[in-house]
Amino acid sequence: MTFLPEGKLYIDGQLRDAANGAKYEDISPWTGEVVAYAADASAEDMEEAIAAARRAFDHSDWPTNSDKRLALVHKLAELMKANRQRLVDIAIHETGAAMGAVNMANVDGPLNHFDKLFEIYGTIEWEKAMLDKEVWGSVHRRLLVKEPAGVVGAIIPWNVPLYITVGKVIPALLLGCTVILKPAPDTPLMSTIIGELAAEAGFPAGVLNVVSGKEPALLGEILVTDPRVDVISFTGSTGVGRRIMEIGAPTLKRLFLELGGKSAAIIFEDAPNFAEAVGQSIVCYHAGQGCATITRLLVPESRYDEAVTVLEHAYDAYAQLWGKAEDPTNFMGPLISQRQRDRVMGYIEAGKSEGARLIAGGQIATDKGGGFFIEPTCFVDVTNDMTIAREEIFGPVLVVIPFKDDEDAIRIANDSEYGLSGSVVSGDEARAVRVAKRIRTGTVGVNGGMSMDVDLPFGGYKQSGLGKEWGLEGFEEYLETKVIATRA
Ligand code: NAD
Image (cartoon, rainbow, N blue to C red):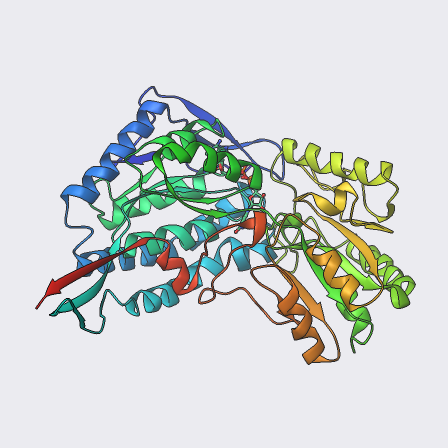
């Protein structure tokens, strides 16, 4: 049985246990068994981390010494790459990623993003002289200055923790902010290892702090309500995003929120590769636990029966292919936890009772081991008002909805409180782009176009979030803009 090294807190430059010695069990999604222990921080530990981050921002040269920052963040990046195998072990045994998903967003994707992040950092325009202006008879020289926004509380979900951590923490540190990283209770080790490597890299005390804990809301709410924290950078569910906005209001906290999604793919009747496009829409990658996963498939009424047949075959073929942890061609393992599996099964029951037709899966899989497995599941004859079409399931469940024409497809795609991602496939690229422009989401792929990358801003419209991660825009979330005007 695999056992991973224990997760320690990293606070004010010290790797340590919780002050009261508390630890909690880290459970493997593959087996349901304990795979490690992690420090269970108390409110006092979080207080100490916030005080340390504040001190490091206000009283050290971190915000102003960019050579030092660059050297240390480079060192951290090197150490993370050198520890790839440990990150892979954590991604598999703690996050439940299958090897095919490890190679992508779970480990290698974020590690490969470092070089581009350093490059983007190099393009930041720290000072910009505006045109001189004459006001009331004198000339005013005006300068725009960018400055680090301060102490950042980074709150992370469990689905792709390393990817999200790199997207938040590396830009914030490079820009001179200090950071308190709070992992999700289910995936503490993917953050505590970063504390360990920052200590090894020789980070100054308080610049980066990592505070794990068992209780989902306790530590995060302290971060959100503490006036010493300037920015909350949150990725997680829309419900918790709302709560953060509410409790962040008294300190007018600057909020960056990456939230849930219910993204739609529109496949038009003229798609030259119609069957291939439909077949590739099955939701299997990382067991559907991706915020930008396309989970509503919109197909034309004129080719609806054909699409259903294609999906029946695609799911049939996939039934034997998933669930093996070490197979590099496999993208799908278990769900993160018993709680998440119960939640997804609740949605499957809702789909059945509201009249959708199940053509694949729908059961807990019992032949993959003792973990939290659900079969790849597909509902057809779905209408967009059903619960399974409206709410984010965050599991391996695809819903298929027929549409009449372009306007109907756009209407259904946009009839959602979410607005994160989407895709359009058509033999007529101009038509597809026209439709993509009318979809109210932050990213849209056209004819297989990859709309998410390290140099592209990612973030939602509507209730999928506020602000952008990645790209230059992802850096700007951690900057303030100051105007200095001098009368010449
Ligand atoms: P979650 O909202 O339950 O938890 C996210 C984080 O917030 C965890 O660290 C949790 O401990 C913390 N938290 C919980 N309650 C809190 C509170 N009251 N105050 C402060 N922090 C609190 O989300 P999850 O279940 O961990 O992750 C799945 C969700 O994340 C999905 O909705 C998914 O769409 C979303 N997500 C979004 C993106 C994106 O980029 N838009 C990416 C990945 C995941």
